[in-house]
Length: 318
Image (cartoon, rainbow, N blue to C red):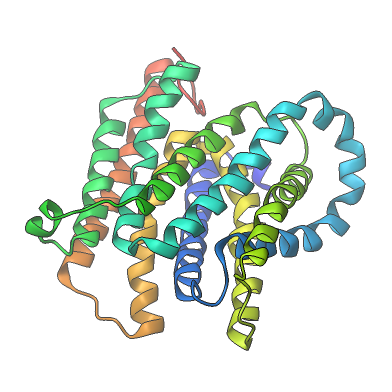
């Protein structure tokens, strides 16, 4: 059964399951970027990521792009902002921050995104929230903090943020606006939208990558570097953006971004599987809090839907 033909409840559960896959792939993206930070400059990595993704999707999307051209042109400003924010600025800030900050700070700052989306969704679009959603966001952030600080409250009190963390905070803000702007995206095929935004991202990143090159920051080519480019270009980019854009439309921006809190959990499991790092009780305590938070948020949305007398509204408007 096509996704669009699924019953509303089933579509939403399918969207959450696919968002879980996206967070797994994005957790791998952060690990790869951190692992190859000495071999691949950040802007060059971002440029290569989108060149690979665009090269794969454009041959398949070309016919649909021609059919969607008029709709894309009518919404050119929204499309341009989606490309500049979600493709260009977000990745430039994230990769730059991962060059100089710790994984701990990166995960903690990314966990703020669901709260930012909830607040700005209310301010900009009048979207109401429920107590259960608020509790869900709080529980998920608590779960992230448990994992990041290894269940040690004293470690949380010693948290220090440096200048590099401003890049990571900026990436969280940029992703917040990207997610909210998806509300305004034109009614075109998903492949058309991501293809155009990938090209915008390439245009935005090319001068920055050229600047890096002039500074003597070049790729230290190896089999691992090639694999890193291929990974970030295909899975966290092409596959993940197609899924995320669709899922954010189905479940709404606030709940879509709440699944970002799964990233540190997946990062811990990937580190255990790939790097042999041990899993500890605080990992599982954090996992329980994160999953409980996402479940509370989902229940809050069902509560809103029932109160409105509608079978499955995607968002609750004031």
